[in-house]
Length: 60
Figure 1 (cartoon, rainbow, N blue to C red):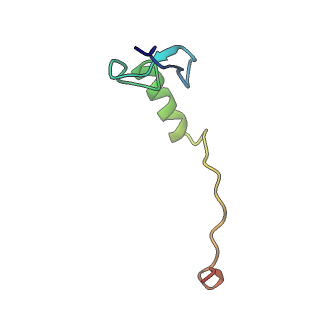
Figure 2: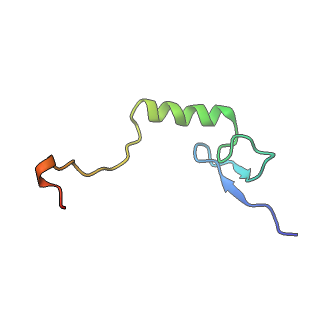
């Protein structure tokens, strides 16, 4: 039998067992999950992107 995968909660770093018995994974709790969601909503996190090219400059 293999040992369970343990990951740190992205919010508070508490060890979380990765499995069906952890419904909020990778978070340790609903609270940490909602804090993270709020940070996305407040635009504290951003996904880098490249600017869009005008239609006539797109490669064929």
